[in-house]
Length: 451
Image 1 (cartoon, rainbow, N blue to C red):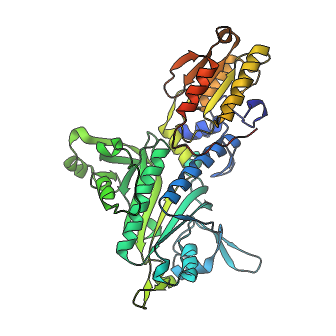
Image 2 (spheres, helix red, strand yellow; image 1 turned 60 degrees about the vertical axis):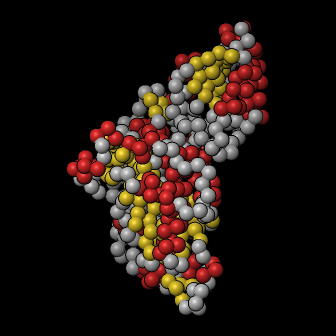
Image 3 (cartoon, rainbow, N blue to C red; image 1 turned 30 degrees about the vertical axis):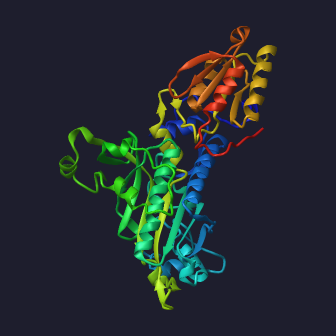
């Protein structure tokens, strides 16, 4: 994409309303703009990040055997009354009435909707197990929305739901999602720490939240250092017994300050292995047994011909929260530092002297070759000053920058900068092309090319 033709409203100064780094940088980098309290427009640059994250989530859900569908955002109140949650959920739920006087709601979650769907569709134990998921915009009327998309009222969420014949089978589905989440977040350049958690209004007696460490996190986190330094499992066979992997990750101490006291942490973890930091929740999984199946009569015919009430779980990922969480974990004084797999563009190409025939020709040639090689490129072909272009590129945080100017071209060279380290090197345009193609990460979703 050529910057002269793109819609990228960059702000030079820090917005006064932004309290945390991610909110400030997302506004400055032209990723989002507020429409109303806790509700944001996703501008093209931010939307590309959102789509990259969404695709990684989708690929890992599919790999784990989950099946994608799409449920409506507006739900009938009757199914929530059937489960007993309509009056209990609180003011976070946006309740509405249609022109026929029917009570409706803008769904904050979908346990009731999916249970009704499965109840009316599955008839036999042969229809099990199943994990269904969708990626959908939701609304919760937060009393105090803040921190940009980190705690908004409207948000994009992946929520999945498992249905199994027994509690033992349901635990297998839970383990699938547990391992899938570890892999999902690592593909985004994040180290996620699973922590036993309260189940809240979702219900159930087994739950883990996945937290990344960041200075501006909402919760105080205490955990064993091995959880921070251990990579997610590779080449997982999801049909195998995953309990050993889950046990390995849950056997070491990990808790937020509101779940356990400091004394227990000090007793259980050697001093040189203690990590105390702030954390941001990016995913949450629950096993809630028959909490919804019982009142909603979600049953199938078992192997012996008798009706069996199904066991269920739910699995959420805050897709629209993740760009902010990633920025909180990966930025510097100059701006965002995107992990390779979720960067909106992989390369930022900078023309230091737009209008110079030789420089323009070299930039156009490399731009075309990078795109033909399948790389997402943002080409700054504007007539801004060089200093402004450098500052904008660092703010946007693309993994690689290629800088082309008349002086370097006289020697047949371009400058290549790695944003994360600041390391610079000079090479021929052809060498730069080959090097960048070789650097594309295997875990990246497919490119989104425009222009």
